[in-house]
Image 1 (tube, helix red, strand yellow):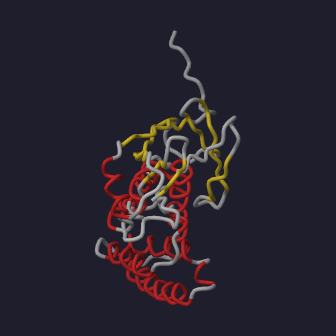
Image 2: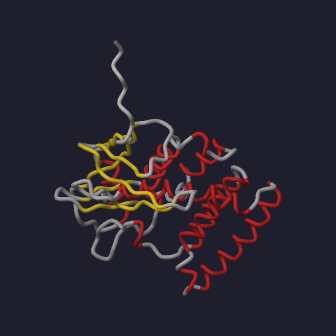
Image 3: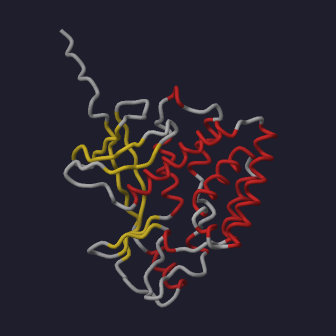
Length: 251
């Protein structure tokens, strides 16, 4: 889960809600730049964190009793095995993209963890097998994955409320073209991305979250109970192309 501390309490966004936002961004990508297996690509982006079931977790709290943010977790082979199994039962293409995402997430830990290093080596062997079976070149697969990673990064920035005020640029990531992209505010609840990677000149995205007023919990069970009782809220952003030409008035 994605946990933000606010003046009123914890703002909690589930990993699955974050995935839906990532897919909303991907769905607006330029048509001419979309890969051939577009529907499967969208599913991979939407479901790249689906193994993260916050309400089933056994350790949802920090030592001080607050909810655990996603970036506090250490390598968990069981979790990544579950994610890999979920994707391969859909199809090899989705499993391939998610395997690359696992590589992206765990690469740093593999430098010091033998368990992580071994798991990533196994995933690499599987990816070679799947690419051969699907007749896909590694260069093309990596380009498609770059789109997934970009949408993931942009969604995380929005879910963590990291967009800067006063129109200050914030780097998202490099996209499939290996160029850096930036997000900045373009007005009240409005954003723009530069360079503009989307098909339409404006669209709306949103994600759901819960505000939890209780700051400390005695157990994961107590947290789950309060999480389910919390009011569901929604944040909406209008994404606009600021440099879009103005329409001429009809005479």
